[in-house]
Image (cartoon, rainbow, N blue to C red; front, side, top):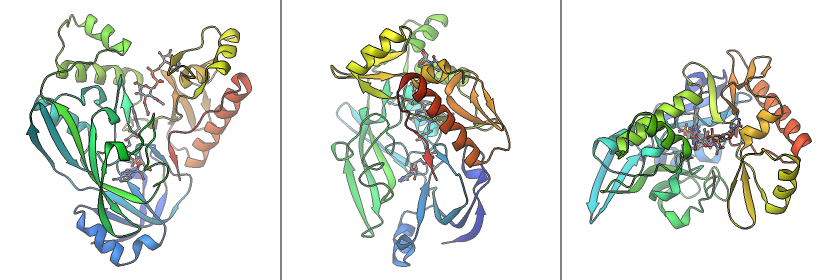
Length: 336
Ligand code: FAD
Ligand code: EPU
């Protein structure tokens, strides 16, 4: 095990923030987690990092950063189901395309989401009509309290929109080492998200394959979202707020154009991007920080922003949205 001191985290976060950590270790073999445990490293401050595409470093990290970099994908077939297991350090989009190449259906709507397999259950990643919880079977995780490996089944994970037990009760306790996805042999196409159908029609595709869906989703994403290798960002900075239907009805009277998605009889999800744009933030520049010109929900680093400046801009957005709509935006990005 090679533990390094005073390592720059700039290459390890998609905001491109310059911050350093006191100690750093790259884990390529999950057994090394046991060695870290035995050496007492989990008794002090630590943080697990995958691709760094959902974190904001607002200061130097005074503890141990554990970068999960174990690789490998395997599968077995049972009836009409394929169980694909990928190690935590596998790049998410590589897994998506591995499955498409093998004609395993289920991940195609989640194409091109940055980050790693190990992080995929943490916030129950979702996009274009699919959430991870729909295809998650189980995961293996290392318990930093006991030094043992544990399995979590889907029903153990308390998945909801952008949330799981790994973000709540067990925040900072378990290190996910591999994830098993339950996929289908038959192509079950999900093109329910409006933008997918529109793009399929443009391409004259009437009977799409999973590859078509992944290509169309990737195309839509590239049009709308900034590429982190060019412009630092972490995708949606906030969650779409879920509010009571009665509060919503009042808002709808005042703002008839409000963009929303009914959830159940009691709750409605609002498009945070619309709320933020309505406050004049779309494309707005605040020093070295800006809300993205094509998607106001994405906050970008114009080049030399500090993490604390990005956080301050996000607070201004929270305040403006609250003042206008009396709705509180919750940050999706993990703030450190
Ligand atoms: P990190 O940013 O490294 O970590 C995120 C959190 O997970 C941290 O709390 C970290 O401690 C924890 N974590 C990471 N690995 C492990 C592990 N092995 N075990 C335990 N905890 C772990 N997200 C969506 O859901 N849908 C989208 O459509 C989407 N689009 C995006 C577009 C862009 C351009 C960007 C930059 C981000 C987008 N995101 C999206 C957010 C991000 O890609 C996801 O949250 C992704 O799952 C983060 O993966 P990561 O490996 O980079 O995690
Ligand atoms: N909108 C605006 N102005 C904006 C942005 C959006 O008015 O600047 C309105 C539009 O009406 C648009 C609607 O909001 O049609 C929805 O926008 P979009 O389809 O871009 O989706 P979103 O709700 O803003 C969510 C996820 C994304 C995910 C997309 C596609 C959250 C917080 N974000 O965004 O996930 O890719 O749907 O499914 O749920 C992420 O989590 O990092 C992320 C990018």
